Image 1 (cartoon, rainbow, N blue to C red):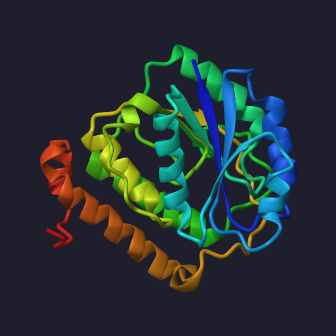
Image 2 (tube, rainbow, N blue to C red):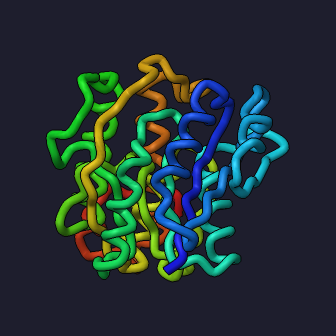
Length: 253
C-alpha cells in the first residue's frame, strides 16, 4: 500500500521546516512519500522546502487552497498511489496522527477518512475564533441535512484527511479556493463514496490568520461557501439522495 502525504503551503516560512521534520519522523516507512504544493509563496518557504527529501510542485502565482489539493490528488493518481493524506502546514494538524490514519487505511473499507476536531476531547487549550466555529457548525449541519451523510459529519472543514485514490477518480473537482470542501462533500455524496471520521486535536496557532480580501468578512465568507454548496447540489441533484431534493434551489441551473 503506497501512501502520499500532501502538504499545501503558502508563505509558511514560520512553520514549514518544523512541520516537514515532524512529518518525516512519523511517515510510516519506504512506501510513503511526501509532496509539498507551494502555492506561489513569496517568502523563504520554497528555499526551506528544498532542504528536505520531499517532492515539490510549485505554482508561479497563488491559485488557492483548493487548487493545491486538486494538484495533490492528480499527482497521487498519476503516480499510482493507493492513498493520499492531506494536512496543513500551520502546525494546526499533528503529524503524530499520521500513523493512525495509515492504520485505518489498512483496515477500513471507507473511501474517505476525515479528521474531526469535535468527536473527542483531545483538544488543545485554545478556542477557535467564534466566526470560524459558527460557520463550521452551520455548514456541517447543512451538509448533513442536504446530503444525508450517515453517520453525520461532525467537522466539514478539517483538511487533515486520508483519501482512497481510486475513489477520487470518480470526482471532478474544480473549486480552487477555500470553498473547496463544499464542492468536495457534494461530489463525495453524489459518487456514493463512504466516509469515516478520525479524531484529531483542535489546535489554533494563529487566531488572526487571513482568508484574503472579502472572505475576511465572516458574513461574506459564509454566503460564498453556501453559494458554492448550493450550486454544486444543483449540478448533481439527479445523483444525490432524495434528501437533497428538499434543499432550496440556488438558481445556478
